[in-house]
Image (tube, rainbow, N blue to C red; front, side):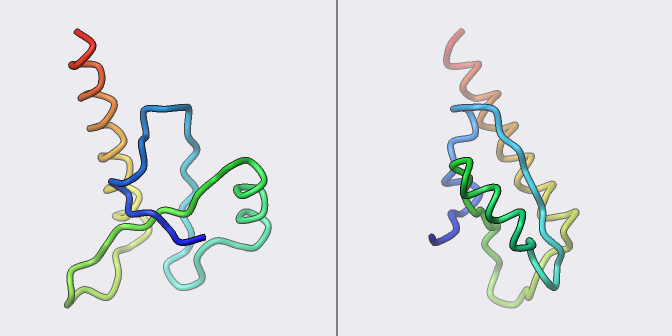
Length: 79
């Protein structure tokens, strides 16, 4: 399964759990298995050409902000 870009995920559909892997090793096999067994999906933050990686904390911040942005936008549309 190919990972989705963080902005391709509809974070408004259901409650979500975000598990962030280590910068060097990613997620462990057990966590990946649990995620896939529960309809989980891999998500990544696309990088600019000259940037190798983000810290796990920064990547998590970017993903959480996108989820927040989507939830706020959806709430405003319902008003």
